[in-house]
Length: 332
Length: 228
Image 1 (cartoon, rainbow over the protein chains, first blue to last red):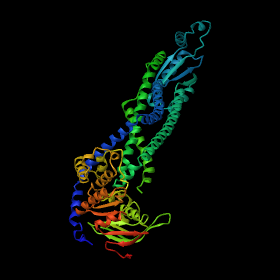
Image 2: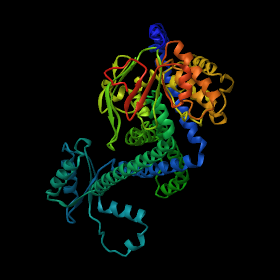
Image 3: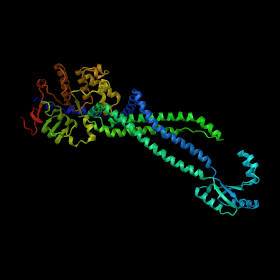
Image 4: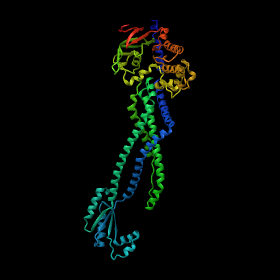
């Protein structure tokens, strides 16, 4: 053989070694972030290069996110309404028909001494009749009655420290025991029922949101799977020339994030437009009920939550697809 | 140094691609690998690239026992081995420059240093004026040179080539071989699989000849291997 073994590369080897080590750790770190930026932009550009296809995915994601968000907004509005009504729980204490006024006033005073009672208003039968006549518009009907059919009522407002449902029940029980009292109505019942219904609705919405989030995960996962398939050659070559799995994964994860974020922004747009479209009629309807209720849109935090929640969802969908399909592509 | 110690490779089909193969390519050497098709040339190169694992025996690259290289370290191992493929394996969705830049991008080079090295590599293979072109616009010989530029751009210690002149006419083949000789001259260990026997003859370099997965003729120092 030729005398090649004598030049067996020691100088050459140290040379190439030295030049390879030129990439210092700091430089590598910088280059790492630079690469992230490049990949982020490139993967977005790739999506924009096939606008119709990307738009379809974005729309699917947007609808899946907007749907539970609509229910969520509706529920929020109901809750605000409910809180307004709930603000002052009140007990209507109906007095026996034959009770004397002096005894009623005495009862009123004794009730006021209780710690659980904040105020007691006495509404005499005459007063009740007057109010009924003014407010109901049935004055003419009342004219035909000989006697006043309305009982005297004590309107009891519980102290704010004694306003839990159990305490209110106890107070009602206590009032019912009074000799003069015919019946006690807690004006809270229906509010509590409303709350129960809303608790159920909340869970239904959460379940729906969970299912639709799973749908988004699968849709984006499938889209990424197709993207991986269409870039099989590229993945093979990158792996052949020393690309790590993280390097190969990166563009697909960014693509998933863009699909999610784009869908989130689109969903947010749909919601903003929807709220604007509905708020006029809703305010008018509320006006007819003599309420100043207004439809509230999405706040800043909720907006961010929708945008980036969707983005993270997309990222997870992509991670799912990548973890399942990328390792099957190896150079052969 | 590339060393095979009693390496056997049996594919799941039951066929022995390599059986009990031992040889050593010393550092800085340029060696040809020949043999009829199916003799195990590609398998041998794949074992060095860790695209396959041996069924038995050990492969050493630069003192590193490849059996000890874990999956997660394969990428780093491949960075010190440049490979030139018969079918070039170029990406047609990007320019010649970006094709050559790929290994540097993976290794984490700064853009300026990256551009400098890519241009140096392209200059070396005589394609500096084609850097903006898409490889699909280039001839077969030019595409092969792009593949070579990509293989050497990261200054690997080892350069493998699988039939690099397979589809080229004799003049172009000679050009490509001259390039390999130049890299070898600066200390790169080169292993070229080829069945272009006339060309190999002319270059007067050590030759490893495979037949049915065994060493038929060893022009390099044989290790415990029968020389037929």
